[in-house]
Amino acid sequence: MNKEIIYSMNTAYRGEYEIQGFSYGSGDKAACIVGAMRGNEFQQLYISSLLAKKLGELEARSAIVSGKKILLIPSINYSSFNVGKKYWITDNSDINRSFPGNPEGQATSRIAAAVMEKVTGYAYGIQFASFYMDGEFIPHVRMIETGKQSNSLASQFGMPYVLTAEPRSYDKATLNYNWQMRGTEAFSVYSGVTDTINGESANQAVSSVLRFLTRMGVIRYNCHAGYISTIMDEEDLLSIRSEHAAGFFKKLVQPGDEVVRGDIIANIINPMTGENTTDIYAPTDGIIFYCQNSPMIYQNSVIFKMIRRLHN
Image (cartoon, rainbow, N blue to C red; front, side, top):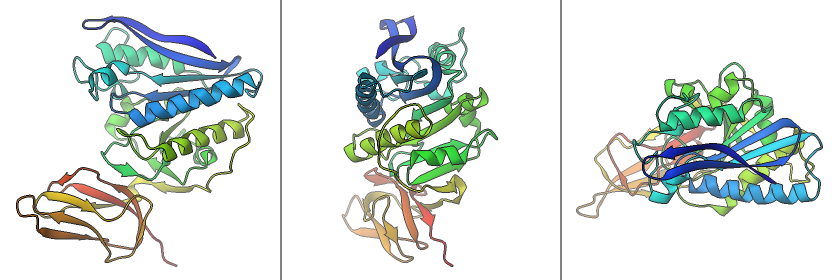
């Protein structure tokens, strides 16, 4: 393992700011893996640390294929971790909405430009991303439909689901989108949670990356075959909203649970009286993909997303 300086700059409040990466093997730019970009992505940083340990062990056993280089950048925004903020500490901007970046721009734009320069040219790019909505969800691989994406390659991670999505305006300022536009096969791996640590889903994410790198001929590693991935469009997920008054949210199901139309999947409780004011019902048969984890739910909030079950 070799340490690489991805970017270094002087900041107004912290002096020298340095982003570090770790490289394994040498030669062709085979795979680049990026971890936490936000200061609340504890799960993504934890996954990166597990992967760093595993790649170090594989390199020590000469299990990185000769002529192949892997670059791992565990965190791009560690200063926000240090002060307990989600976004950049001085202006609350989001690094993953700043790509491809501007070397003469604001801090997050300069960081994005420097990172983009370092990660360009790799055959495969993997980001441990956090879901755009707060809550818990089924682990999956997400791909933005740029016309350059490969669903068959995404299936090689062996995750339960591959989610494809049309790029929204803000997606075009993300690392994943700009990686694809520069010729890298880019994938976002989502592991279930963000601001807490879930060891089971973290290990699943690490295994999925090692499985993918093995199948792409980058490392030599014996691993479980994983899932036969179900590929689906993000637009096909059914959103369930809280249509009534706000209240405490008591969920009765978890991501991955199968439900039948009419099942009660949550209660909304009056915060003043403690009475159950609303039952939330499953509108169709299917699988819970996402659920909100906030204790308080407000009117018209999305509280679940479901995968509809298709009947023959």
